[in-house]
Image 1 (spheres, rainbow, N blue to C red):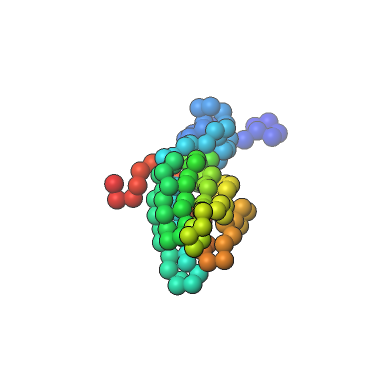
Image 2 (cartoon, helix red, strand yellow; image 1 turned 90 degrees about the vertical axis):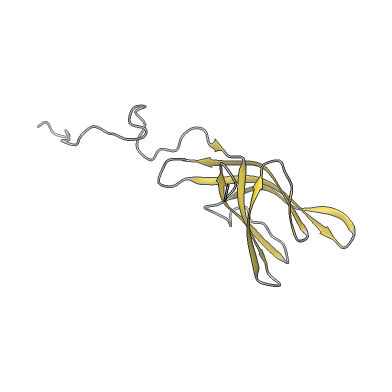
Length: 134
């Protein structure tokens, strides 16, 4: 066998036909119609996990979550990476709602662009194709 030659079998599985290495992240994310968000009320220690459809506001106590996009990079790999673009507004004692968060949340790195609020914590858990229980 020549120097540097390998007796390994040819690649198989996802990505083998296209010649891309296994585990390579695709060039485009897969879009999902629903984001799964978890919220913590720091005063009562209550947590709630809910599905938020893209484009439809969802209320949790004084917060209103609106998911603008939910997409996952690396679907079908060992390490998929869900991310969602959210707009969060808060009601404050009869005043007009104010924006408290706008930006991308990353399920695998919740601290990168964290939701910062004195009473609530919120983070993205996943992007899914249909609501749980459906």
